[in-house]
Image (cartoon, rainbow, N blue to C red; front, side, top):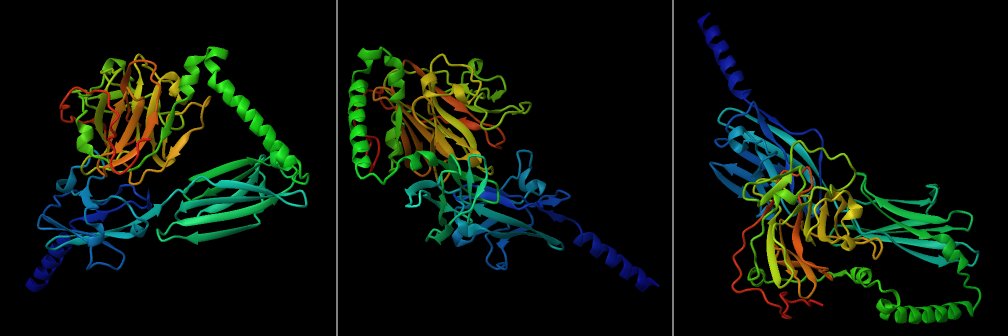
Length: 498
């Protein structure tokens, strides 16, 4: 009887120790873009201090070669994940390792990182594990359409796009969203593991006015381009004199347009609008000397009185984020959440840096950074934040990518592909040269330069977006060595500033 009691006690003790915690992971797979930073959530329930436990993150069937191993307070990383993996917080409310949060952060994602990741936690007498599926995607370029008239009166339309992962679906539709049958689809895969897609279809005059070619991922993200098929059909190539005649007419009209443009101020007197429409951008993308840029650093703070009331600004006026009570009800980026800098400039070179990622938190996906005409305060929607209204910026709109400010009256919107996603953004305002430049500080790369005719004094512009864990933080750079002066010396290394 005594032996039975002892055995029962031992069994109960074993049950108590082996069932002391459970590893919890989300049921849904995690989806992230190439070049981005992602968090794979994993935590212990009930919460307990995980600093004394062994934490092993490993890929499918690679237990002995972990992505990250935390053991005795030290971290060991796999070679392919060196400087790209770390333990992080799954949310702002998390208490970290002391609270049982053992989530994994992966940076600069590659297509090869797509896999099933196992979160294995073990103690002296208990262990458990969970599996997180990571899907990596890449949104390709906008499709390029090329029409070719056929002898039978139809038009063959070619549609090409590259930079996709995984393989995208291709669809053709008419202006009434009627599905058109493709003539064929070919796909190829490059050394970077991304797909290039080429599709084509033939349409007639009766098929549609507009024809669209779209490429999409199963996550719902897509790229689409359209072409006016009727305009192509009306350009009948059968007349051998028609093409030279059209070319001659276009040349004459172009010459007349050039003359009118050159003397537009005298003819119309609309000098200010023409100047605004001359704003443009030039993407350089070369290496940059950050130390040289920081010689023009200035101290930037946010003016709370002239910022949106639904923004939470820190006491030192250096940090800003969306307030907890703010509810974004509209579609797209929340342009109204703008914060304006307390400083204003109308000469010289001024440089500042903005932190977009904090330790143990994902890099911000939503932000808008630039300058605005002094006096601009409230923004209602996208139509208000244009160069003609005095707004010049670079915007990160999450899965919608990056784009710069544009004016529909002058130019179409300009989208950019920035990989990796900037974790710290440098901004250089060269008022004298009429330039606003952006830099990826961590990668020491020049992103782009906007050419601007400033109408007067300008102030820094910030918008933290909504939904990110991290706030937008204005950093304190070293004071400039000397007062900024006008200079024609380029600040870029190994690239042209023209």
